Image (cartoon, rainbow, N blue to C red):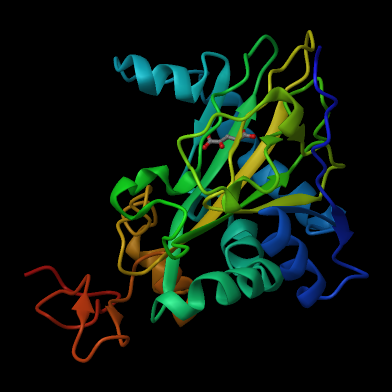
Length: 288
Ligand SMILES: O=C(O)CCC(=O)C(=O)O
């Protein structure tokens, strides 16, 4: 007999609930839906600044690796360099105060600073099948496990409405606290982050999740992922290569640091990572 589905994701509202409320649910469930993370105006600007890339990017990967092909999805469009492609992204999403509040709380105790792991459009097209469930911290397997410290925090912004049919992210609430990370989730433990446009799913690097199947005929689910990573680990995206120096020079120190235009220093005596000439990265450096 099939087991009843008991998996639930809690929805809060950025206009009503405090950061402490959001962190409490995030800690309990490993994921929380937050409504009103993006205003209509910000979302419209993001969509129009990213429209050309959304159109011109072809679905699926160019990699010949079968694992990458399957993970990516054959009818899913992905692209990064969002800070280069969109001023609204770099000014209002990359430094989103609520998301940074969650990341400060989750990652702050384990690093001197964290940086962008990746900012990635994840646009799931009709006919796409469900992605395998995974943990974002799978990227760093030697430090993944039930007793490991958190190293990454992720957020999936809904640029269009996320429905059960168009591929809303599948999540296994509570799986960040499992004693055994090799355990497979039962169907009854999986729910979906169904949410209106402008909302976001903020989730732990150790919660099981994956893109949902898109069973619609013509709807593209427009997701925009942003994740942060402790500054002493290598991120998924080469953030600073993705944004030219002439734009980087105009950004705030925080934006520069999140994008990898600053060195990592501070939590261990004399630790200095990601340097040039063993100095902080001088934006606008002359290449001689
Ligand atoms: O598209 C989604 O909803 C999630 C995708 C995901 O988790 C990933 O590609 O790492």
